[in-house]
Amino acid sequence: MAGITKALSVKQPWAELICLGIKDVENRTWKTKFRGRVYIHAPAKKDTTSRLTTEQINAIDHVEETYLRLSAIIGEVTIIDCVQNHKSIWADKGEGIWHWVLKDAVFYDKPILNVNGRLGIWNINLEELKQNGE
Image (cartoon, rainbow, N blue to C red; front, side, top):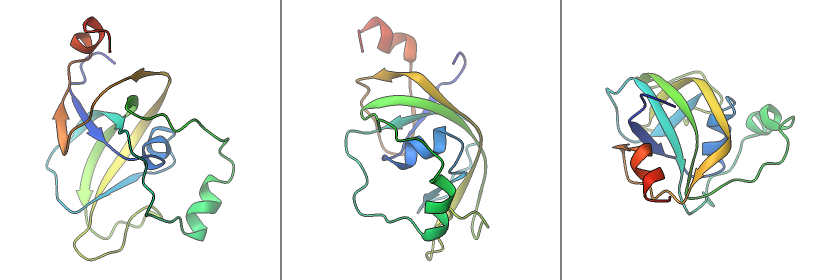
């Protein structure tokens, strides 16, 4: 955990699939030049509009049911690239969508609870959060 100062909020269940190393692409409407390690934050609200494809369902059918923790830092991942037209089953093929390519995911057994998120890639100070009792 030491050394990471950036975080990215991703709605559940996508946040958990990223941290489990299953979802290797994050879909965004904007490009990022950022490369490096980020904490994955699961905001207070789940994604209730997106639907899994058959291929995606098959990719996660071996995953045990999880808690889908909310308002928490649940893991970390490295953003290694940002492209369009990625081949991943997780890459949204819609017009103007950027695919943030992810690797080296870690899912925390003990998440950091009660963390408020922000839009975009945001700065975080975990030591300060811990001192404030969050």
